[in-house]
Each structure stands twice: as C-alpha cells, then as structure tokens.
Image (tube, rainbow over all chains, first blue to last red):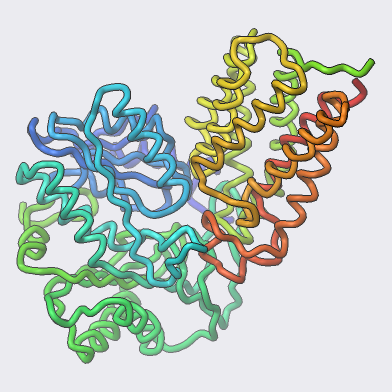
Length: 332
Length: 214
C-alpha cells in the first residue's frame, strides 16, 4: 500500500485536521468528527444534516456551506457515522424549523441515522425528516436486496435541497422536494481498478489489467458484471443505456454529472463526458446543466459514474442559486 | 452438580474473551468482508470491543444491566456500519432483559439472549437464510434453549450453542445474500462465508471458552 498517510488507523482524524486548516469557512468538531458551517444559517430555517463513511471526498464534508449542508458527520473510511455523532450534529443545526437527514441507502447508514433520529427526538423533541437516496440502477431493487444504493444523485440533491432550505421553506416542503429529487435521479458506475482501504492495506478486490467492473458502487464492493476492457465509447454506452432504460429523461431538462471515482484524471473524465453527452443527446435528452470531476469518490479507485437527474424549471432555478462550499461554489 | 448460574465476573470475562477473539480474527473478518462487503468488519469490531473492554477496566460493572447497557452504547458509538447498531442493540436488550442482577440462571440468561436476537431482527429485519449474523445467532439460541430444557448445565448449553452457531455460520457459504451490502452482489455472494455470522459465532466461542470446565 502506497498512500500519503502517517498511520492507517489515524487517516480520518489526520485528514480532518488538514481539512479544517484548508477551509476556514467550515468549523470541524474533531472529537465528534462533524463538519459545520463556520457561520450558521439564520434561525427559522431548516437544518440539513448528511454524513456517511469517509473516502468519498468531497462528499459530504465538502458540501457544508451556504446553499448546501449545515453539518456533515464523518464515519470511518467506508463506515457509517454513529448515532451519537448524527444526534450531536442534528441538535446543533436545529434552528427551530426542524432538520432533514440526507441518507444514502446502505444498511449501516440507514440504521445509524434511524437510531440518531430516535435519540434526537427523545432528547430535544427535534423534528426530523429523512430522505434516503437510492439511485444506483446497477442494483436490482427487490425484496431480495437491501435496495438500490445511494450514489451520485446525493450530490445533486444536497445542492438543490440546500438552496430551498436557504430560502426558508418549511421542513415538510424541503423534505418533499428532497424526495422528488431522489426519485428523479439515476446513476451507473464502473471501475478500472479496485480501491485500497487504508486499514485493510491491500486492494479490496482483484481486477486483472484487461478487465473492468460494470455497476460498481462507491465502496469497492464488486459490481454486477466483469467484462473485458473496452474503448471509452463502449463504456459510455454501458453507463448511459441502463440509466435511460430506467427512467424517461426526454420530456424535461436534465442535470448531468460525470463523476470521477478518485483515481481517474480529468483528461479522461472530460473524454468520457464527451462520449456520454453524445449518446444522451442522440437519445433525445436535453442537457441543461452539467458537472464533470470528482464529486463522490471511492478512495483511489479508477473509473467513473454517470448521474442523470430529470429536472424542471424550478429545480434548475434552485440548481443555479448561489452555493459556497469547499466542493461546489458558484454565484457568490 | 453442574453449575447453573452465570455471575457478573463470568459475564465480564465473556466480553473480554470476545474482545480477544475479535482482535485475533481482525484480519480474517476483514478478509471475509472484502469478498462480499466493504472490507471493514474486522477493524470495526476490533475498535468497538477494545473500547468496551477499556470502559469496563475503568469502571467494572456490578450488575448485568449496567454491564450490557454500557457495552451496547459503546458499540453503537464506536463501531459504525451496520454492525454497530446490530451488536449494540443485541447487548442493550440483553441488559434490559437481565436487569440489575449480579447473576442469572440458565433460563434467565437464555431469555436475555432471545431478547437480544429479537432486537437484532427488529433493527436489521433479517430472516433465516438471508446470509447474516441471524443465521448463526438463531440456531445457537435454539440449541441453547433445547439443552437447558433437557436439563443441561449452563456450560453445556453454551457449548451446544457454539456448535449450532458454527454450523449455522458454515451453512451461510452457499447462500445468496438478501440483506446488507453483500446483497448487491446477487448470485455472486454465494460461495463465501458471511462475516457477520462469523463474528456472531465468535461470541458463542467466547462464552464457551469462559464457561469451559465448569
């Protein structure tokens, strides 16, 4: 394992020290591993709390700031944060209008946020609503699985719903919007390499040089299908087709994200975006807004994911609203 | 006459032994989790049980409810993932069921284990054959209850529980996972031991080790 670390067991703690030093616009509670805005939003507005395992940076701590999250609880690498962390974050960003929990659909995350919401309500009577993002079309949603995983749509949701909370909309409306966004987004990912969890010290799975994994998640958990390595134009098809097959994106403007998994350079991500957008447009999708880069990563995994969100004028307006976070910044 | 009760010293020793076994199997559990999960089960359980033992060394518990509630809360707040809430809930229910006592007889201990299992089911919604810790826990409790009903001592019942847990664990190999991260793999999850069922078996290994020779 070759990594820029001191000690595999201190990666998160050490990284948060650097994160706090690099971004004075956020405040880091190192003991509880929570990232807050340095300047909290006005009272009477809904607080947004997210969190999850670390290793997906900039998600979630990188999206704390004006127009997005109020707090992000950081778990160990690829491990959900604990209920007491989330409870603490919830308590501190309840500005009197309730709190929305944004949770990616993983068994651990759902259980820990569920316990946290119970604890927070019992302790302070906080009003907590929860949205569970489950947008990964690679996973079959059935009684026989834990359901689709939450991946790229989470980023778009935190941006759009963050803008609505900033406008002072009530909790019920913010939660309803969050569910609308969650239901309107679809993602599909692929990996060229595995990733290496620092505490494990070796790659999570073996992937030969001439093969790739289609339908990968964001934790190095193997995907659905292993296939021979192919040109970018073919890979683009393997990502676009299942997304479009799952939801009709032709009737409304779309927000598209071509996301890097952490180990693929921008030159390749832009190349992939070019391939993807060609296929989307040929299929009748109107791309209204787009993001290309590393937004929800899987440590050092090489590969990418595609997220398409079915938007409308209102979602586009909220998308364009000012945002000022370490991970996304415009209009300010 | 066979010993039929378990006291606070043995209950505490059980947790210490579990911590040793989890520590010794840290790499193995993580390896199992790499195959069908996200490669963190060993590290997470090790961190959690180390924290539990540290807490118990600071302030030893005098009653079963104090012992297991502190164990449960510590696991909930240090483990993360799905294992934190699941093992945490298991021990919290164990404590609630036993109450403020310094020892329990075989029946009360069995009822507490049962309450723990029910907590796990409520939190994780797993059923038999889903390829989870349930597949080791449920048969273990079945065997324990059967042994106690047949007049076995607590130590003998614990040994029967271990054998059933191990068999349940081994029977997870051909199963297709229907809960947790392994379920994303579909058919590809078959052919692997379930890490949760494996760590749950260590819990009964620890109990058997603690009571062996009694």
